[in-house]
Length: 209
Image (cartoon, rainbow, N blue to C red):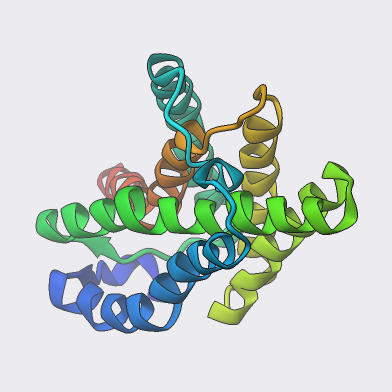
């Protein structure tokens, strides 16, 4: 999250993003991607245990796109009116880099870990899916504090986490993460990348008024 006041119109470049992205990959993304596979390998569980199934793809894509667009808009509005009037406008190339990361790396890995692994493991240990839902949603929400997100931002994460969980919970078994991954990617991009552009365009219109 940027802490630059809007009138300065500070840009975020590929170099800026890369400075935080590669350490994030090493310290967060890779471990979160590896742990679920180690768990199912050790216990000889199928990939479907993690929600890695390939069925109802057209339906999953449609749900992911429709809900994802709504959630991206919601995230941008939440960022604008709840989190605060700060933005750091990405360059075009940085938009592509951030968008790729949020849609194809961060979203899939976080869903694999929280909705796939944590949810399934807690349900397996306790015998009740309610505990799996509660623990996975709570840990997903609160772990953002490790990134020093403020509580307003964490509150938005919690709301998004409820939507992600409901999409996953509403499915018949075996559940698939595909739609949730798409919605997650759109939401994060709307909050952290596209939201900056929306806030800049809004500020620009106000300056010209």
